[in-house]
Image (cartoon, rainbow, N blue to C red; front, top):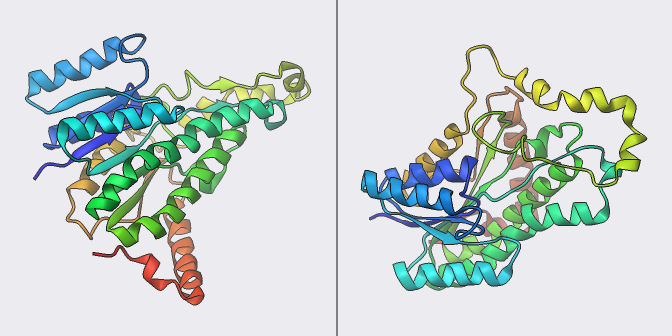
Length: 296
C-alpha cells in the first residue's frame, strides 16, 4: 500500500527531488512550501503538472516551518483529505556563510528557527496522529557538517547539530509508540540546490571587516567544496532523494537509523558507527535499552 508522505521545503533542491522520487515510487506525496499562491506559485504548478503528466499522486500544500499555525493547518488539511499521514521528510533548511562573530544573535536565532525549531513545529503537528495509530516514519535530512564541521558556516553547523540531537532524543520516545526514525546525512553539494547561491551572510558588516584578512578564504567556499569530489563523480542531490526513496521502500522494522550520502569522502560513516556503539552502550548502562528499539 502506498504511504502518505509530507515533504517540507519542497520548492527546490533535495525536497523537490525527493517529492518527485517518492511520487514516482507510488506514494501519495504532499510537497510543502511557503507562499504557494505567490513567489512559489510557478514551482507548485510545475509539481502538480508533473504529477498529472506522469500519473503520479503529487500534491502541493502550503507550510511555513517558522509558523506553528501553518504546520498545524497543513497537517490538518492532509489528514482531512488523505485520512492519514504515514511519513514526514524534514528537509526545510537554509545556509549561512560568514564569520561567526559577525552574525548577530538575531541572525543565529532566525537560522535555528528554520533549521531546528521548524522540525519541532512540524513534529508537534504530526506526532499526535502517529502516536494514536502507533505507526509512522520520521525522516530527517541532516548534514555531514555536524561531524566534519567545515569553516565559515558556524551558525549553520550549530543548527544542524542541534537538529540532529533533537531527532535522536525524539526517536527514543516516539519509538515506544511504533514510530520509526531515519536520519539521512547528505554531504556537500554545489549543484542541484540553491543552498550556496541563496546563502545568507552575516548582517553585522562592521564585524565582518574585522576578519577581512580571511575574505579570500570565504570567497572560495564553493570552490573548496567542489575540490572535495573525486574526478568524474556526479555529486548531485538526486542521490539523496534516491536514498530516501530506497529507505522508505524497505519493510517496516528494517530501515536504518542513519544513512550517509556523501561524495566528498569525508569518512563520516566511520565516525557515525563509533558514535552509534558509544550511544548504545551508554543508554544501555543507564537502564534504558528498550528505548533503542522501536516497539511493535
